[in-house]
Amino acid sequence: MVQSLVDPSFLFRFLAVLIGLVLHEFAHALTADLLGDKTARMAGRVTLNPLAHLDVLGLVMILFAPIGWAKPTPVDPRRLKHPRTGMILVALAGPVSNLLIALVCLTLLSVLYPATYPGFVAQLLWWGALVNLSLFVFNLIPLQPLDGSRIVSNLLPYRLEVRYRKLDLYGPFILLLLVIIPPFRNHVLYPILTGLLAFFLHIFGISGILF
Image 1 (cartoon, helix red, strand yellow):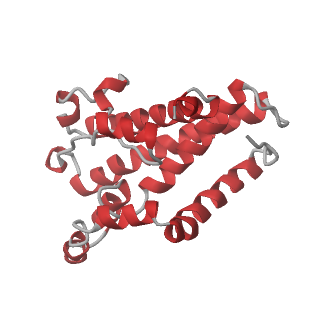
Image 2: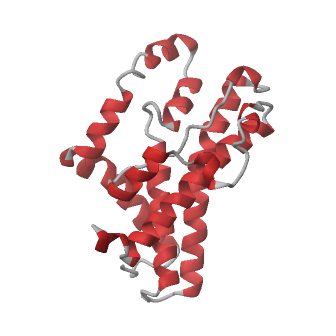
């Protein structure tokens, strides 16, 4: 375990997750603030300070398990100028921030290292792209407590939204099954992630890079 903690790949992956989670929650907070809800600002969440966003247990899980999380950003839909549209934008802000980070990493990787070059900076950029694409895909799953659930519920007519919300109780358990049980993980999550990664690697012309 100690050896894994000092492994460069582990450190790069941990740093990428740390940055991805912090910017994800910051994006939620900033978007809500711009749309009229000051709840996150009053809670000290409109900041890039990692201490304001990180959850101790979630950070420990990042270190020793394949999952992790940050503190959920507090949002009061009633304070948004347009509650339903506002909640969709606030929910989208987190995953979109992760997608933008991944695209920046891939752009830098394609410019600085057009050929396979497993240097420190290249590996950090690689893990930044991979981790943030993973966060983008995972958070768009339409199950509580993920952002995809908020997006779908606010797109549905009220009658269907009420029915959909009945799934909220089971959302965390279904997510746990998706992450832990290999058949679900390997045949549902991984194909989406690998397909998206392969698409972007092809677009940026760096499909030959392996770490």
